[in-house]
Length: 182
Image (cartoon, rainbow, N blue to C red):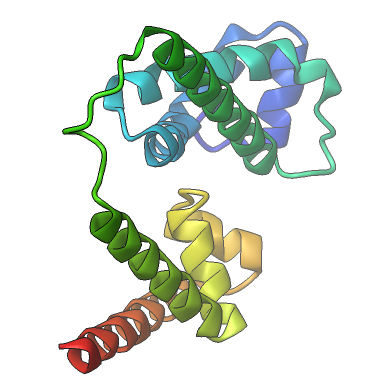
């Protein structure tokens, strides 16, 4: 079944084929776990979230519109499952937590982290739209080069070039910032 498209697999899963849904899980397990990990920074929690996301997707197959990409729909479900998990963790930790002065960042550390995040966001925003789109699909959505090529409707080699150039431009921009600050 590995040559079958997502829409055909969704249709087969809707008709009760466990094999079809298992193929979708195999296809998207790694990108869903990566997305959850990027949001939670916890590998075990990311795996649990991926399992939850696939369960939600399975239960919601009837609501999936086949005129839209399955991957995009699944990533929205995974993102929402990740955010739900983060919210639950915050509620639990706020009830259980005893303030620990030693673990909170100093004002200087907080300012540095905030400045770095702002510089990175500005550098990404300054990229040409085509480079930024490819980079965001790769890092934010966790798509593979082949999937990015399909999403953007461009050749695979062009995706590789865009991402490589975007990384180089970001590196140059951010290293330049560091050089000016020293």
